[in-house]
Image 1: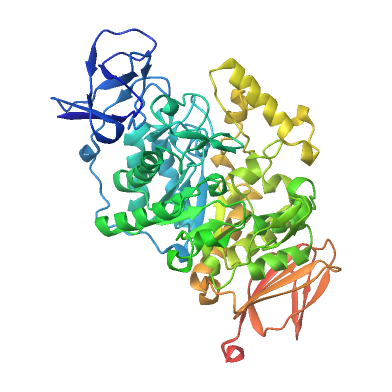
Image 2: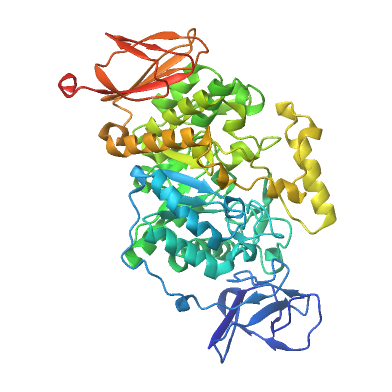
Length: 589
């Protein structure tokens, strides 16, 4: 039997149209009426289990794809297709992901990770990640979005993997292949808004509200009339990715824009349901959040008044490190730029944990108290911090090799969960631009115009910003794997491999406690030293040779420069270099 079910509480009649063809604008007289059931649901069971294309019509209106469509083979404006998840043969029955506190995260975008841009084509490159030392692959959103190219944050069919990437079957093969190589897989999901193109949810029920607004479109109705089923929609979506596609966790985009005044916040409900799913399946799942408010309650346990997430991104650490390395101070970077800020981020997680931000013109954040540092993700690059630049410049476009090595050392020796962005490990020369493929000419023009206006605060000229709608913005963002083995890419790859190996083999670098961490620095002489029990990471940011005090008696284990000189209580470091020491066993006591 094939069961068709849809929530449309305000409808007087709901019709099912089978095998309507790829064009939903065509009229069809082959309409079957669904039966009304409790809670605003409509359903109909039909004999047969083969894959079938179908669409719904509300009160005799136009044909619409299923809000919970598992497969959109013709894209966002086409019919849905039935899918039997039980037919896929998995090979990961005994799989359990590595513990998140020991993770090395790697964010990638399927469309630009390879030239082909599909789940299938990404599988051969997984061996590269294994040799690098990655433990968790984090996919940017893959739910069906407009056209054939995009970041995925304007998805509209949230239950359907994008047809251009390879659809449900391709995604399952990718996840299965990751698990066979010992790689956990996390998925980025967007529960704060939907894209404007192909967004038909409002035709079915009160999914949206005018009570709040987001920078990207209508806010979701999570606390108003009808919100019970809206919340159910998103919780079921999260459960589906973990249950039917075997993802090991989710990263939630911009949770600060998930507005909910309910006594039990949506995020708390979601965390509880994912924990229940873990008990049901015997598998462990992780939840990671992006939170612009610097609010540690997201990763605080429910018992202590939090939402119970496992980790969240730490933009303050990125901004502090980026500005020290690049010297940029425009836009939101104006709140950062001193070694004092970087030291504060290393010691306290947030630079702005309850203090005034001049850029925001308000108090920003809340102090992190009693939480381990592995509840926070640290990075020098990610899709936002690269792709939201005028020309999609990576750190490798802004920094020299010496500076890149300092940045990598602080990311991979920090107390936070380290995250690398695709290609960062070898200093990829390709940019990562913002790109879209909207079919609506007015929407396409609005996106292109909005992109130019968005970065006025950074002082970037509008003429320097590539048009997101141009296919070249997408194709130029694809990684060039031929760069591996070439200078300086090979040198940077070896450096990242060495750092990851050091982190995974050194107990002091695996500790999440901030109690045994200290930082010393000189703003005047541009050096900073990070001490983590038996490990010292000594960084010279200056273009000049520096003599830096060392308060740990140890052996050098990794250096970005062969010309350093370690003497009693000091180290002589050449310009823009980093030295990592591990204490002698006797010195450690």
